[in-house]
Length: 518
Image (tube, rainbow, N blue to C red):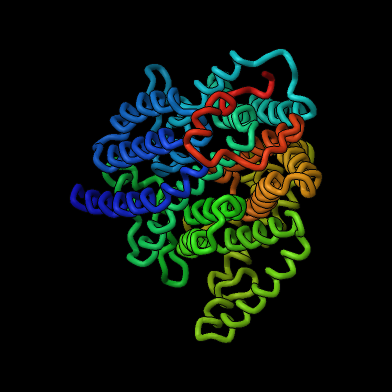
């Protein structure tokens, strides 16, 4: 097992070293050189520790102090967070044992990052917060708090006080702290763009690894779980049409595909700052290769929606969308008449024959969900799964492949409304600033177009997947970025763009951690 793990580590490190070297000149346009070097080194140390450590707890002992040290020196906690977002799979977790009760709570990479990066950042932001409010965006804060409170209240009658306290604590670190830090940290154009660049860098590392997994039929990060003895938790290997669906460290092929689709959306804006056609095309194809290797059709649709929405929302949107549509139609025609045309059609959702049963299952799930929602429309039912036993699959699970249905079933339409409302408010604020700045600040308008397009893609993704893992994290990251972007409009920032040199970045360290209340 050690030898196999070592081979996987060598492959991961080879791909990562190559990506970091190639991407460095591009990243330094958005990220201070000292921050880039420090984050890169931390990524390598955590990856080496994960693959070489015989125990998850040894990894934790190395990760938390290292991350805390890095976060203390870093100028943008959110950029650091998204780069290390999936340094290991979020499905790799252990229960924290405590004397007297069965467990304290599950610890995974997201919560490790929360404890070491986000909570200290939230503390610093809270201490620096003034008395002025967050303007109209306070509605987003209030609605997110209301959603979290509803999750506690609805389940209190069916669980112990200890369990309710645990639930409240986990919702706080998983949702409230994440949104608070993103929305209060990313309140300048440079901070938002740096965060987007860091997320693209993380996905650029996963893309070639995804291609390797798909071609070789070998899940590289599966070896970590094997070494730590937790293979029984998840069905790790999933295939479609005889091809392994890559997942790298995202935890699931759908999650990997979604992340690469969002990274592709972020790159649509970042490419305008690079101004190099070969690099623009190469990075876009790089993300698309990983997206195809995940073999998840819903993220393919997300990527298309993000691209179309970005073109339509930006300056001269109608003309750009028309040109892109002509090129896309020509490309699609060439593909369809080529030898691979039939295979492409077979893999299209709702049209093709590959895994057509998943479409049928989704249709049954939608019909049954709507029946149950009508029975408890306002606040849902904690026992809705007992009425869906006929939908249990061969793996022994009821796969709720629709986040909207899952939330409405458990929390009702009230809970679903409270979940979506802050996200939609943030998206609406971003859209209005995008339109308002189109004629006076094209760069700011393009940034808003990217955020709005990625949020629209996320809403589409929620119709095809559970709101958990990377999708849930990015849901609140995007909501926070939209709030920060809207705050830029309130401050009247009209500069031409983010800093493009390490010297400029170092001179503007402080605003990255500055609260909008200052």
